[in-house]
Image 1 (cartoon, rainbow, N blue to C red):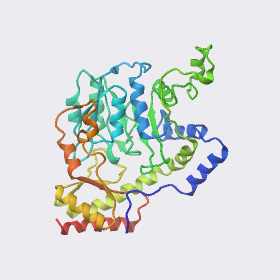
Image 2: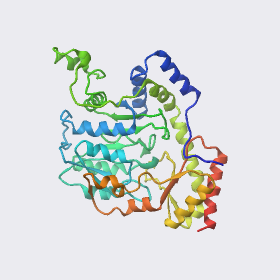
Image 3: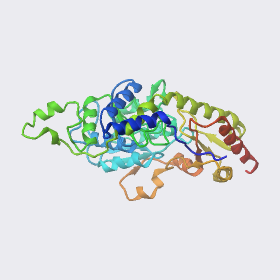
Length: 399
């Protein structure tokens, strides 16, 4: 067999809706995008959502909005300033960190727990200084950070919380959907993620002023897509409202084609995630012998987390076991990957960019040096799940 990391989860309905959008002649951001934003916010249980062209762009808007001079002042929240610090886990994707730097802030990398793969909350608390203004928990590979402890520390120190949920759409922590517990949540709809809009992402918040600011930054600093555009335009009667710019901004807008996909895929999300959970549970049961003797250690759900498994990540006993497992997977046609970027502090790009490392990153090093994952996408057949399990079990005869 050839077991791919991911396959296309879209079908004829998504294609038909995309074609309908194209035939309408209205393909740039419009009513379908607004409908998808409303549906997504409803799925999360309320608040406001701004659809963008990627999860990376969602992170970009989140940090640029809070660092913007037009950001609303909130009691119990520190003010952002040039050179202020944002705490992030060392195990994350690059575009969690780049927008922090791009918005004039300093990322502070803290360790990750090699069992859960999530930010070590104790390390996060130890990294807080007078310069810290925010913390960015990243819900890695369908698991969640221990948010009750993190939120308590953030409240004590008046920190903003930006939840990067790009790898964990539909995961829950103590019954609450990941991405809805902080001040801002970010999500990704890339091809391989929990749902796909081909490319796409969403940034969400329950603060209407922050939502409006992010909508402004999403499209050039323009007023055109703002909910309060009439009120703003009335203050500038000398300028044609068709081209009124009130802030800096980007062009990170999605298309109606992306939204057409998203509206169909969102209805399938819970079913997709149930299948992901069932596959992971099957493998944990089937690979019990390798787990019990410590040959491999699959990601452990954070206590209180209901995981929407994004792949099947694990740490091996040592590098030799990891390399032997990789060879066996390659021989048998099972695609695999490292656990995202590993320890970002070891990536060469970061060496020439401003950042701070707080404490040791031994957990992140272990994840980078001994970790790997293979796919657990919702369209895997029972035969494919069995094939992967038998392939992994066979490594026991070589190590």
